Image (cartoon, rainbow, N blue to C red; front, side):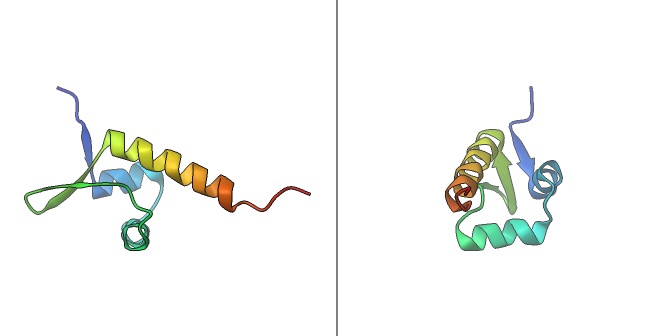
Length: 67
């Protein structure tokens, strides 16, 4: 069976961000969805993909228009 979710550390490593950045994203409402399994937070691969698309769309919206 293939893994379907990442730990926080694995997610951060895969996306080139630190844990503090991820927690700040969650605090601001911009972080990926996660599920709790016991005391752990896991981020599914589908949630990570959705988050990447949302962050790309936000970057496009927030980018200054080219002159």
